[in-house]
Image (cartoon, rainbow, N blue to C red; front, side, top):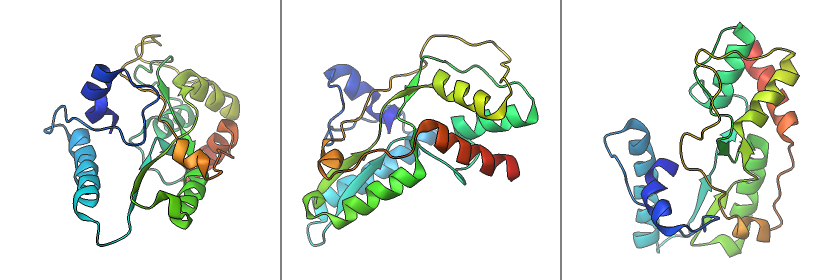
Length: 193
């Protein structure tokens, strides 16, 4: 989603990103953009033609936890640390709203049980965290240090900004799982698999 929103967000300077912000596709031939585009098309179908049924769109921002696959940052870091191998460059100042899957599940249950979210788009996100914080927490959990093949750079690789969660927090939702607790559960899963 972020890759597709980049051009629009760069042009608007709207921060945090509102729940109803429009999208703009950047490169539909890119595999990640195609995935995000499929979500946009589904959302557009609901917004413009789904009035015969009740609907809500939940935009999940960087969920993590057990069983999330191996192609995202946190599992890649865990595998590299556990296997004692170096990892490619991580931009330590880059941020993401990493949100533990249990908190995502709580948010989705609140959204489904509320009439205030009918016919709405709701961002499911939390506080932005630097990748350095994730790296340091994983190092603390494992007692090991992650090494890098190209060193650590301090320049962010792309645009990420906090998603407005006004609708969700208005329902009484908050993030319950600390980063350390969530990463500990994720570490335990990935080091046993």
